[in-house]
Length: 508
Image (cartoon, rainbow, N blue to C red; front, side):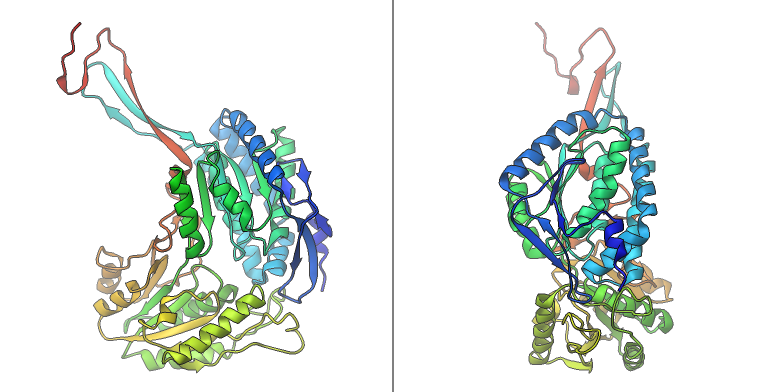
């Protein structure tokens, strides 16, 4: 297999894992990256020491004093340049994402396109950091609000979107005048180096100081240092609910801010009024895209009893058409899981489904033989279950789809909402009343609620995130930028007197 894209992105066998911009630093401890595609060694990235972490944070603090003074539209133009640089490297970076993480090449390219899109969104946003003007109750006074950058934004990303999640946070934060320190997933460290290599050229071309965008590779200890660090006012963390609860607790204890993007247990409601062609396509991609390792992956299909058997039959037939194999081959639909630990979790989940009373419509299993040497390729499977099963209440990061039967639309919504997570949801219907009920206050309790599209594939223009154990944070579009800034209310007295609020008299 041609892996020339690795060199095109400036990656070598040994790569410095800490960078403040143009400067990079190594240690004598290395994180080895092996591809789940073929099991082969790709390269190594050094792990940050405590001293390197401290030096990086100090550089970021110094850079913030400069970066915050750069006019926002100028910051937006620099981010636009990053978008251009990513466009030039889209093919190579998309291939690296696919090779190091295991998602299909189409999804790898798509992830890089998300990065490009958020850069161009950020350029526009840089001229729209609006505050409100308010009328004062005091004569000859005016009031307004403005938004100021926070300082250092710590970004902790996960393996399933090894580059896009960083860009959602870093681009918006940098447009807002913040500086970023990125702790990438130790399962996909080379992707972070590639992104930094691309960004370096943009920073150099604009003669910008060290520390505006930094990376610190390493294990969970890096995350612990960051979450405990009062010099990092905002930590944006993507990962498991368990991880998010720890991060939230630690950051809250120092009265810092968090943006949390945690687990999902996403459902599609299929009503009798649904277009089944759309249902099958949306459910299939939602369940097997990225081998079921998206936080927005479709986990549950809640189907009306009148169309249940038909949907089940069509889905089983569709699953027989799935091509499983090397994700860099565009003819394949499903690539590998990230590693053998993920495979073990997949197998354990299948066993629990059976123990708890589930019945498999499409059987799972691990694939072996030519093309599957990494041991990370598994069969997407479908099981008939009850919503209350403990395994169904739990998010399994694998291509396991659960079928659940319902009688009334109210029951379906209760089932959809009846899990601890609240990220993405969808309803398939051509009935206006069903759609509007699903979108109403009595409908989906998720941060994302769709009609006639699946649960995965969120666009950058909308604020991305969920409720309940998903964490409540929002990234990307809409007014998510406000989480990266601090609000300040200003009152200006342009009179020769000092009237007090609420008519209070205070005379000397």
